[in-house]
Image 1 (tube, rainbow, N blue to C red):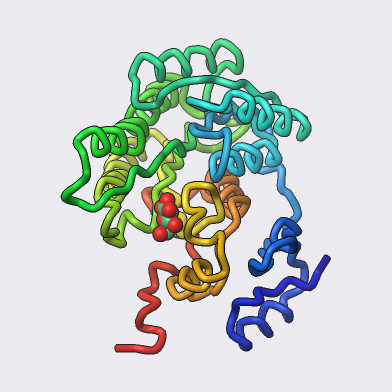
Image 2: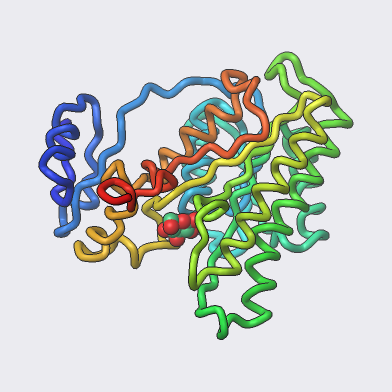
Length: 310
Ligand code: BGC
């Protein structure tokens, strides 16, 4: 099916989409009044053959897509989850269908003992780690004056402290082991999944925006410190990606229309597009990329209000 188009897009945007060859249509959307999703058709590259990856929060959403993209690129993958074991096992089965090994590990990334146990289990089963994707994250939204300390601590605990604990464990192994020249010219890669809200303030989501702003400078500071050891640390900062976390922003035509006002590219992103970015960033094709936030956001960070104003 090669005729994707967003029925909500402007006529010129629609024409541009029609003109673009090789886009796969997402049939999930065709049963609803929602615009059809488009996902460019890309040939999988075996960029990560022989590498061992750990993806936190990999049982659903963006984490699941990253785990699958890394496996498709040739990596063996640890599928971390904290709830939803059946979903995590289903992701593991999909990884194995690519011919890669999968290891399902329950761990709360905000808990130091859980994290240490998970990394030990990974080394026991897969030997080492080459790629860490710090993806586990959540939102607990509230008007600021109603935000509870529990909601603040939960979001900072998972989104920021969890990334610290996993990154620290990975760096210890990368430095101990050094470069495995047979699989990569780098001694290890860390990809932090941040958000456009590491730079865009977000009313009603203060805890979430604070956690992502923290991820940005944590990532850059770690990158600066460990670069001499040939360890690369970067972030992917997604905008609106079609996952359960933001369903209210896209699951009715009205909501989707409002969302498009924030996206110059005039479509929501698909989780696979973050997976593809992660596979590239983890590979030696990105060997000179260090300490950056790669925005995968259809231009959400381009001040879309200025399209017609200013
Ligand atoms: C949030 C989503 C939101 C997107 C753009 C993400 O980091 O998790 O809920 O739709 O940013 O605002």
